[in-house]
Image 1: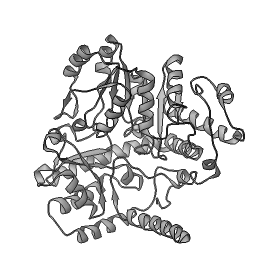
Image 2: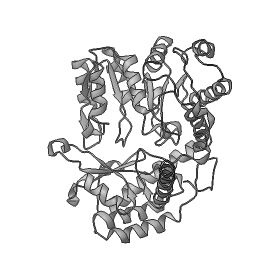
Image 3: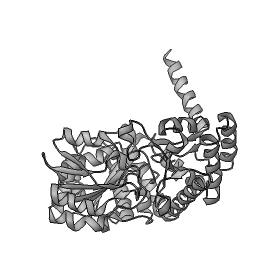
Length: 430
């Protein structure tokens, strides 16, 4: 029976790869890491324990050595130095903390370092593209208070004038820019002086757009006034799952960030993942600008193609998007977001539901969110987005049988089975 467990897991892994190799993988929160990145994960580094007490990264590597608990890490420490240097170079940051095990850990560390019990944190509401109640609840459990940005749902961005008034009125300690369903840059420059007036820090959730920032094709939050840029490293940034915190703040703030991260949130931070992140960072230095540029071109082309197919695409009057995401309002189709995402999955088109203004009152989701990072990674260009939109139309508007649409999806995917923007150019991606 024990041996059968291994055999079953191996078979399920094989079936997963076979299936997803024949899908249009359009989850905006996912990407495909290259073989060079993935092959770092099963190494012996993942069996070793790094336990060092902060502050370390905010000061120097001598401090790191003083805080180190275990020996036998000589080569692993060299990998950490390489990873940190690459991230500092990519994001032009003097502080690059690669230790968070997720984007969520990164934001919790920011909240702990930059706010105190009773402070107000401004975040994005779920109907406005935010991550949802989970993150807000975590802040409340830490003794913080949550307020949400005023949001212009038509423009799909923060309402700047209303935000100025709210900042003056509630005097928050931390303003969190960025979002989960993110189509356009945040108005950091427009609101930074108002934050300064009330003594608030600005930070930026770059979870979804970190690769676009690294590729210099999106706004540059660290240059626009935020004290920290944090996020996930596995979305538009095609690394292993995990998180990162970047900053150019003064030493006092950096030490507070260190202490908030280690050992408060975790102690060991999985060195096989750090090695994989280092390789992903090197790939982004080599290919990141071209990759980010093609992602945005593809997303805009998909938005236009979906619009031409008769769909209601959010922010069509603004060119649909400046990121990797397209948000489709499916309410005119008579379906909700969950139902639409399930229908698409039955056709081998993998996406997820999204929320729009008024959805909470109706207790449903009204949108589907598409991301093009992975499609771009396997070589699709703007012209292919018309084919993708046509298949989405057949599923959601024409009600063609899932089996028939699935077969067309498989035929399309068979034309794109080589990795691009990677050290493994031309190799199978999965």
